[in-house]
Length: 179
Image 1 (spheres, rainbow, N blue to C red):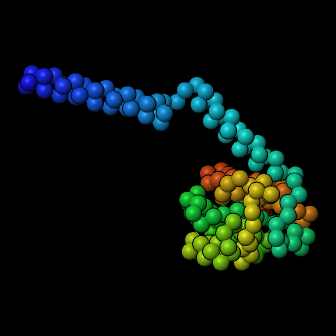
Image 2: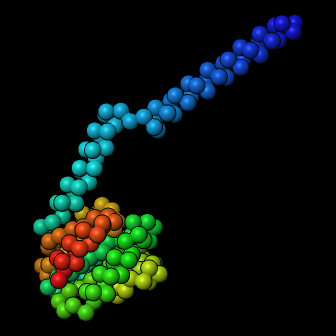
């Protein structure tokens, strides 16, 4: 009987090991192993994202309670309080607003999918001074992620976009474009 008991125990241990190896291989393949198709899908999806943003330039946009005509240029900052790239970009946004607030014919507007009081409190906590904070759905405008900066002329037409956390070269590009 003990010989049979040992054989059953050995077989059950082997079965457990085989199942563990099988599950491990499935998990590794699913989460850590990129196939050629996965890589191509990621490239295709990232190019779709870039192309959708590029299609914003030249488009007329409308946002609630924003008068484009009152200013020659309008800088729209699309943000969200849960966006870590927005938080990481705060030093640049602070520099940007400090340099541009006194500039005539330029309006700076922050737009968030959150209620204005939440977005305003978020900006204040980052030290970013923007008086005009609006709530809007980004999708009709064509913004697919935050943070996004849009340069909009006095006819409501997007002339430039900057997407995501910007490196120092892109930050300099924004400042040069707005001067």
